[in-house]
Length: 511
Image 1 (cartoon, rainbow, N blue to C red):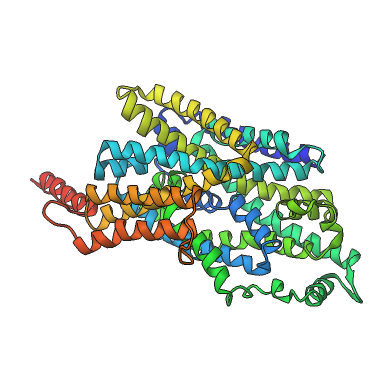
Image 2: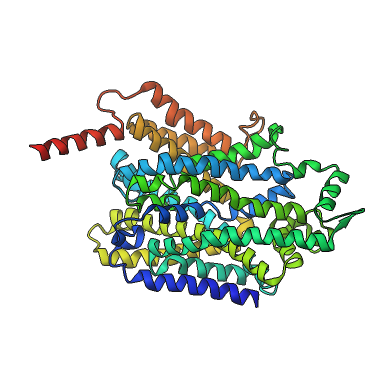
């Protein structure tokens, strides 16, 4: 019954928004950038962007690290890193910067910097590297569906297959405009549903849980104290743990600030915004909602980890993945289970949909049209974009169903975006130097391949970790050396070239 209500909710919301917005989609730019609306206002930009980073990596991984990962409430530092650091950087700096170029995809920007061949490579790498994220979101969505069914719908393949269908429908009819309308509703559902579930869990504890002579939350605190795990209850317990910072928190921040800042899916709201002002205006609201959204998942996970009835219901190797869903089934009334899982679905589906749309846009615009069919009509481009959405999602579905087998490949692909960030920043602000760009890519990809598939012994800590190693060599060759060399001769930065071009155009208009 709960599953039926949730599916009806998303079915009506997604299909309704799709039918309404599809009437306004006449061109490929209408579909990918909401051009028919003249660009998106700040509230659409804010609500869409605030949900995009909130996928399974910002929910499932948080409660997993908060429980079996040993961080407890300290896992909320991840949310702070994203809500208080990543979002402002994106909305105040990276988003307006990309928007100011006048282009609609990142490979178009790098094409203007480094040429057509580089843009084809950029688009191909970007599409490949994002496939692992979509596969993870399909699994996260599948977990929510599994929970809503009370375990009656197996996670693989059926729950993941349902997730696949909803991820496609989220964007298939109206594209970005459809996603933007859905995300406004889901932004509200995300906060209301998840915090309502926390209240329900606390009520259940007061009636059903006791440790020693202490009931409810007092009993939870007594349990952790008795187990010598009181640090689980402190948000700042991991602040003094150098290993946690070096092995988890900083690498996560580095991945956000490098690989995701040049992700087409994460930048879709900025390319579609009416102006740079509309990108910046909602930064405080976006950061607050993003940080708040993580709190319920970590709290429920930490509470459930102290309830033996929950842990005894889950196989040991599945605790991290299923502890919150199983706790919800055990502790919450059916309406609150539905609200909590709709909150999770809102986060995972928005991430999967935006990255799928961004990848399909790059496949169509920067690979198929630019490299293969340059005389493609706009109508053909719109049709091919929809076909690419479907094909790309199928590939990600196959990866999701066999996730444990190919996890090293996922992480390897994720590393491929890191040097692209440094190439982008250097070309934009320092100098366009094709030689150094290709040296950066070759060295970074060799390190990513070796560290992932054939780890080298005796590498100094923390550079035995792939993320640290790839970021280091990308920084040295992609940013530090260009910064030392600087712009020489005709090697100017892209921003300088744009300013000169605009200045020249202004002078022509005056003349």
